[in-house]
Length: 353
Ligand SMILES: [Zn+2]
Image 1 (cartoon, rainbow, N blue to C red):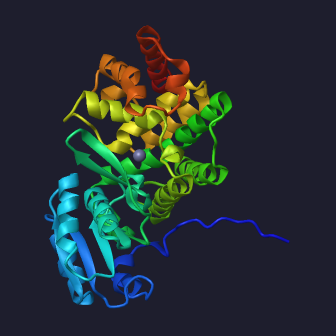
Image 2 (image 1 turned 90 degrees about the vertical axis):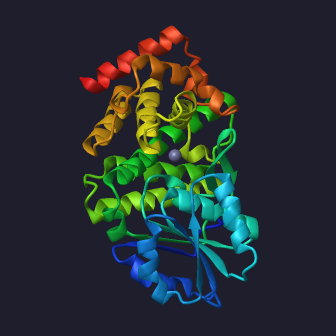
Image 3 (image 1 turned 45 degrees about the vertical axis):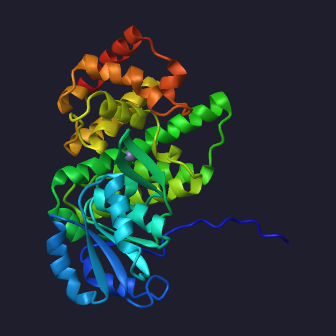
């Protein structure tokens, strides 16, 4: 009897707990990751120094590279610095910018990448996408999924709480993104990958309904695992659809229309998700989302991140242009400016009531 299955590229190691950093050397010594101990470690040029001092004694074969920023030039410079050494793997040790640069550089020099995330600001910690600034604004580059992911919850708790909040918004937005994907299936026959949708939705629902707070290890574990599963869902789907719908289009529109004024990714996509859920007619779901966001100290209306109602409505109108070809509730409704204004006012009244 034939056994049909599929292989899913996924990390060899996922280590999420307080104190995980103390065992990083033994994770990296795994023969499948590094035979010789020769590692290229990317760190930020600021806060990375302290981590380097802590880890240097246990990683004697490592070469350390400082990453200046989150642009494609920074990532190419990092790759150029690494290409003359014979390394087994690239380690990205830091926040989003360092990990995105390390992912891109590792792909460019053909090495596996180990992500050691020091904050939880978005679902890129274990995704096959590297987000880098380029001359045209911001680009998403396809890269292999990290071969290992290490998150030390003690380190996460030292990072500013806004990073944890941002991760919450990004995880919760999955629920709206998957609903948009299913809408596209119903209306246009777009293929939904059931496994990718399941992973992304469960990740979002778990964070949405978890009773804990930003300071609990139990909640932080569920949040980190949610962000990891989101990344794997994107790997399975082969695109960002499981974690990116109207919520992300609205956030991209805010970034593009009002450069320099952006709030965190998670704050913007969280508002986008609660509003998109409202637009899909799921008032109860929208209120649940808004309630969770508010409980964790996240904004639920545009005014709370410094955008006027008109500015937000303008972003909602512009949003479909940020992802041509992606069908979400925004493309489905094709809201006129007057109707978008009205819908947003209704949403604000609902979540404020
Ligand atoms: Zn996101």
